[in-house]
Amino acid sequence: MNQQQLELIAYLREENRVLREQLGRRLAVRAKGLGSKVLREVATIVTPETLLAWHRRLIAQKYDGSSKRGCGRPRKSAEIEDLVVRMAKENRSWGYRRIQGALFNLGHEVGRGTIAEMLARHGMEPAPERERKTTWKEFLTQHWDLIVAADFLTIEAWTRRGLQRFVILFFMELSTRKVEIAGMRRVPVGCG
Image (cartoon, rainbow, N blue to C red; front, side, top):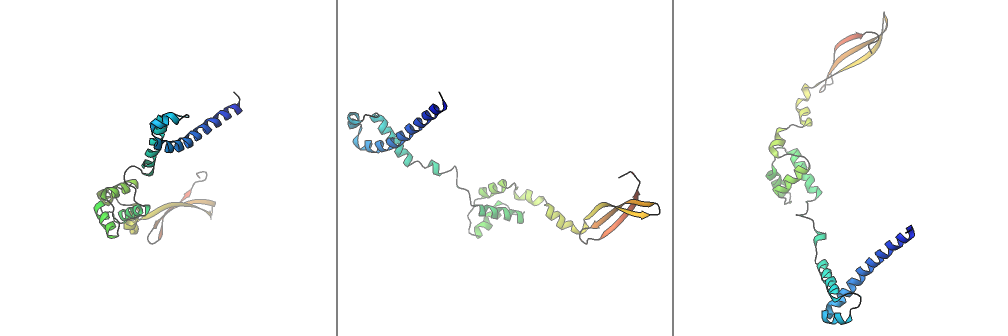
């Protein structure tokens, strides 16, 4: 078969499916009122059993709510989930029940299990583990006055021996930005 014949067959199959679907619905609705005895005498395209089966399928589809629902309860809104995560981050000692109470005070009724699921989705642990761990931001805030950065820099300077390269080690207190030079050494030629 050539390409045009294949496309023609595909079209006719689709047309047949659409017609069966449309006519099936219309015939099924009309057939239900007649009953199977009269249909046996009148129906020529399909059997009365097929017509009544189509009608049963229509009724089942009408009252089938499975496409409208998912499994379980619907999720809480993203705003409430963001609020739960924010409360847990800002109050690391708060457990699920404490967060639940705070939400209730704000007019939101959320279950303890739902709060646990929300925090788990965001990779957050229960309160005892959250409370024990220090975030990087908290660590820096708590130790800011004690943190010192260290680095090297190189400079080129003219000396009696000509242009020389020196390496300088320095430290800087982050809280005050005070810089102290710890040492300076000439780099031998050919070493960088």
